[in-house]
Image (cartoon, rainbow, N blue to C red; front, side, top):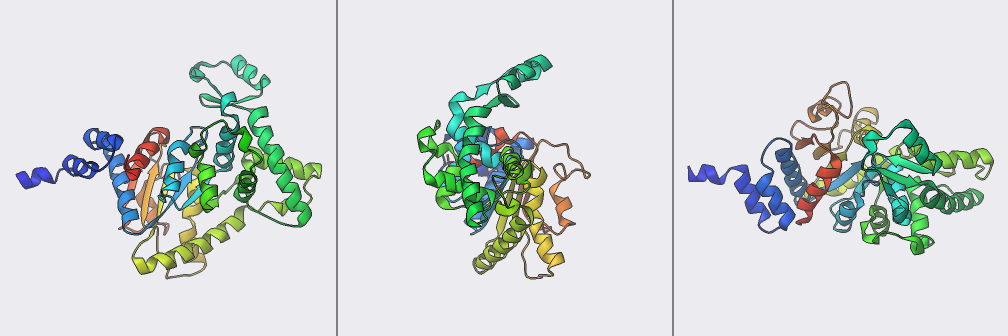
Length: 347
């Protein structure tokens, strides 16, 4: 009986948490069942994946940057717990918007009760609402547009082409925004990624605010070559090459590449498809499948929805193996992701 008691999850978790900080000890004590237990299992799986020599790709859908996930994600990047990021154009730019205009943001805690007239009043003030948070157009979006437009035009005139994230890295590295920082720089995941030159893939960038602004710059004639910003298929071919190189390096050390998905949509579906593309379209038989998978999503479980598909469905598409550690936490990522990161960071 004593041996059986020692094998209980709460006992194992408490033992693992002893060397960690108060957040991890809280999780180990309280998170025992249902989605709480799934969160714990995912966090332990993430940690085990890294300890086995694996690398981790994190994908960001939704409005995680405006939710200020950077407070925890930036530290994960600095501590070498994240090795690549795939994000929507919104998440790429909104971390930088927050970096330079945080003091002008407005929170609307009663957002569920706003009338159409209330929303009209916000738009007349150039406040763009994301759930309970309003992003100020002039202080955030237009300020960054001015900085990045200079880079677009310079590259265009020089006949150079860069990915969306590379243009953002350029303006961060230039220092031209530094005097405008309104948050602690260590809370910006884009700054952390820039410092480490972290690989970033941004599928569907065109539908983001800066993507729209770039299209406008092309229409105005400010940018003459529409392909000055590299997108889409070029990101996929770059990702295929990256995956092959990483898999080759890891194979000798028995590690693999993991996939930590926050939300669904294109940020998750685009990168996970690189493996079946390599297998089925390029007929590369030596390419390993993803070695860990976790998704945090509040999407209703459904086999007709990518965001709501359970992990096992990905086996049939050649993305995951039957043996791949798989976790799904059906909850709000703004609550769950920082807790998982805290466990991995030992906080």
